[in-house]
Length: 98
Image 1 (cartoon, rainbow, N blue to C red):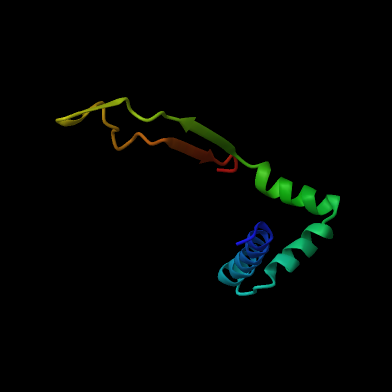
Image 2: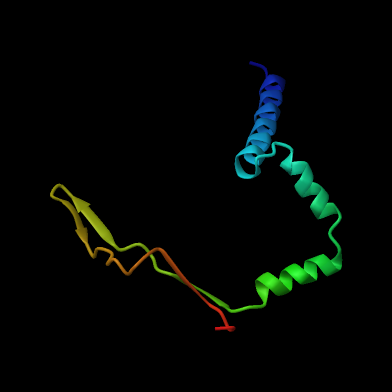
């Protein structure tokens, strides 16, 4: 297969994925055009409304907890295991509105 054929196949696969994503998530394979149109026609007022709605309320806190230190030998894995309350990432969202 020639490099040009690989690039052409990649473009076809990318197009198919875009159409499939629209169909799966919205029921419309042409959703990418709807979304592009929405973005192209957005005004500063539209952006301000969305930002006020989604970004101005509450507090977002992200805590990163590293994986435990484990050691492996012929008997298995030893070391501190994660408690149920420990996760790689924990986050909390507190709304200031109650």
